[in-house]
Length: 132
Image (cartoon, rainbow, N blue to C red; front, top):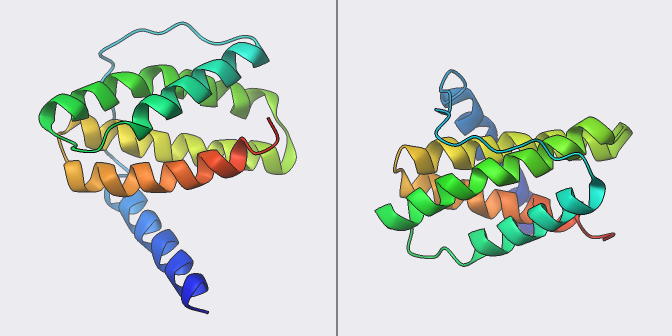
């Protein structure tokens, strides 16, 4: 019961954050080519997720690095959104939303928010990539 409550609390916090920053847009600082192959998307997804997991301090330098990493990660997740159907597509869309929140929070040097969004991203990413 405790875990269900914590999960619901986490989702409600995420939904509140989505609503709070709904009008906020990421600034395009880096151009990254679209991903057109599954193996490339998986590779970029795995590599960028591993890079994000190394970021612990969330200093200004690390927030900038996270911000830059999200550009490639967004392309990988966009590939999954575009090429999947049904529940897998919905899961990829949820990932895309959280990656965008990580992008915006890190871009705006908000370490506490970035940590919350990264934690949510890691949960979703682990579940999404389980079958690889």
